Image 1 (cartoon, rainbow, N blue to C red):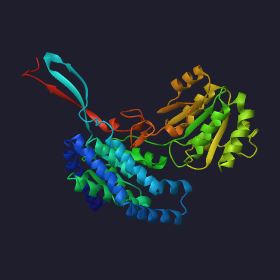
Image 2: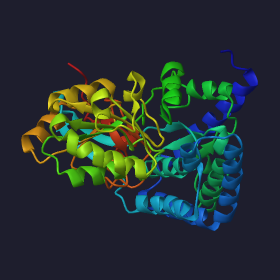
Image 3: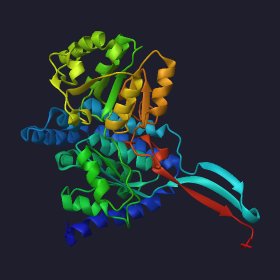
Length: 422
């Protein structure tokens, strides 16, 4: 796709300003960054009426377009969610600053002294859909780690994102910091997004956060290094020895607590030996919560109300009140099914069998593997990282919830005393 020169010019101008801001961020002390983060949290609270009013505009437009309930939920800000965004920034203040951390030191050839330290990436790009809370989370994590960030949200959240970014920039400016360390790409057109993805001169790293379509587009089109995040076809597997009440409680939490997030469960696997007892109980509980059941033929013997599951259902990230269900003959079939249809995000086993748990955790190919716990725990806050910038489902550089350390790279500092290579 050909990108108009004026769009390139406007987009690249943000990159140039971000690069200048990144140079300032790299030398800010931890004390200064924490002071500005505290001010950013206060700004979200003081500007809450304006932010919530802007969000109401976005939500009304989404409802008028008949967007799904899950989409509207991800888009919606409430006073509690806004307070959570502010609290997330304050939580970052209490975390240790990774920048400058010495990871190792040794003597190299001819007695040169080598030190390995953590440093900022520089400029990070975020491209995401309909989640204005990501705006504050990403800005805060990047700020704490000395990075500048350019945020590109979706058109459906434009008013919300703009209001949040204005509050954050104002706080940084009032504290004497580089406000261009937090910028919003306001043009939500596809052309601007493509220009953004190809800003190798300015962006050091690009992080997409959203549905499969967005992430696949970024991976395909970007020329900037990308960390893949967030597609979550997460499974709950009830093993032969599972405590069935525990399995039910975890299943309901993982599926229904919040449906529009990547760590919600989308698939249920049940060992054949407990299917006759567990599935009717689980099916009734899920149906009572409004969950549509799509089941394999064997499962439907115990779930006559369920629709027949298709191959596509087993691989789907529904982000809706829908779940796929399959009976498996044994643990190995469960593992093979998950590794075939999963998205390497979060997978859970419910079992009393220690050996089964060890076998599951060693063979499942996922960023997070849980034993007797809900997939909803895959979250930076739950892991003690403070706010998270995303959940990586790839294996290079970062994997799982990405907090402060994942937003750093390394530098080697070599100290000599006049040595020349022999």
